[in-house]
Amino acid sequence: MVTGYGRVERVLRLWLPVGVFLVVSLFPFYWMAITSIKPNAELYNRNMMPLLVHNPTLKHYVDLLTQTSFLLWTWNTMLVAVIATAISLLFGTMLAYPLARMRFAGAGLIATTIAAIYLVPQPLLFIPLADVINRLQLGNTLTSVILTYPTMLVPFCAWLLLGYFKTVPKELEEAARIDGASRLQTMRRIFLPLCTPGFISAGIFAFTLSQNEFLYALIFLTKSSVRTVPVGVIAELIRGDVFYWGQLMAGALLGSIPVALIYSFFVEHYVAGLTAGSVKA
Amino acid sequence: MTVRSEPLLGVTGARRGRASLGLWLDRESVFSWLMMALPLLFLAGFVGYPFCYGILLSLQDRPVAHAGTFVGLNNFIADFNDPIFWRVAANTFVYTGIATLLKMVFGLCLALAMNQNFPLKNLVRALLLLPFIVPTVLSTVAWLWMLDPAFSVVNRLLLALGWPRPGPSWLGNPVLAMASIIVINTWRGLPFYGITLLAGLQTVPVELYEAATIDGAGGWQRFRYVTLPLLQPIILIVTLFSVIFTFADFQLVYVLTHGGPQNATHLFATYAFDIAMGAGQLGKGASVALTMLPALALLIVALTIYMRRR
Image (cartoon, rainbow over all chains, first blue to last red; front, side, top):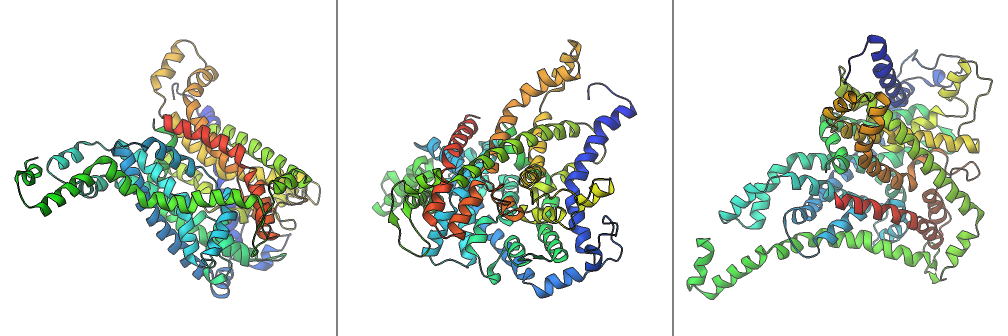
């Protein structure tokens, strides 16, 4: 950036490394995509050039959608992700607003606790949680995951929103308070509408994490009708030692599309959220 | 202000009561605790309680669907006398250490390569993040197929380049299986490092590089004495994050190897899962999961303090 350099140097410094990173990052998705449209005769023939498709077919997609519960799993995944995200944004706001704006004894302790909970990985909790879910008789219900996903999403949203809330200037709220608005009115009418970008960042993250969750869904959801896409794909498309690679890759690709679509619309918010925790001082 | 002082000028008691309730609710501490009560109760019930209950479980002999009996530290003693447990511990440290190092080095390379102006930069950045946002299990299934014993595309490419038949058994050989899960974890986690470090690089003032150049610093020296010190806090925070979640990884190993071959890739999380969910020994499983706690607690406390300070 400081000095301009010649064409060869630019290839070596820019296009070569960026190109290598791109190929490595994207190849598995390319492989997923072309596997899903290859007929079996081609998939399991070792004499054909593997990187290209010779006779594309949609058979694997048709089989996936007609012979498995994939559409139902997709619906379950969406439903759970949307509700868990909504709960997490609501609870996250209820935690972050007082911590960002009010002075009260214990605020520091609560903020520290939330940061710590955010960092507790699931494998530390899944065994006792499995027993709790059993005792509540919530096994094989979507409620089990709708209740447990927010355990990781609420601290996360609270933390991200806390950082965002602190960047919003206080003057408007102070003006509203002087005009006689209660704290709740000030928060709802004046403050929250200013924070839409923060909610979008936190929401996309929570949604992505819900779609990605595997361990709780694997343990709590053992009936096909309540499964989410990741668990359904792993538990039902890999049958013993027989793999249905075409269907598996079709399922993996279709299962990735909702996240990728939402991500592509909000990529700047996603990057902002990703870097918020570490870059902003 | 005039509105609020009105009731004091002698109106009915009911109105005064309501006004004082309003004033009470308006106090910062009351408002705050009322607002936080529900989410805090939720976290206490679904994180705090299971955490304490997990500790209790680890002190019990507790088969699934049976009442537990208190056995003191016997589960932990059994763990420490179990050679597989030590294998699992070693695996977890190797996996976390090497994968973190790879992500750090290549993540920095990625950030430096991306910190140049070129056409379609935003599109390239979005594409590079894909491995990180696609559900882990789904991309890992693609890797499972890429490393398939009979039809591995990696091996077919190697054979085409003259590698002797039949090519490496990526998930069947203990050392190669560990190498494979490390590479795939790196593949998935790299964008997080790269894009976060890139955001950090973009905050480094150009003047510093110019000043260093005037002082006679070469490319390497500018990197060593300007870039690295300024990036250091971000590198630290990203690394702590990554170490915590790599240390407790589950999905990748569950899908690729189930801990095999011969426990060569079992991590704490997958081993605890096998004992608790496979063999139905909730108490012993909880004890294995809890042995992660000292290392995790150290990391979590360090990162929490660091995040709170900023």
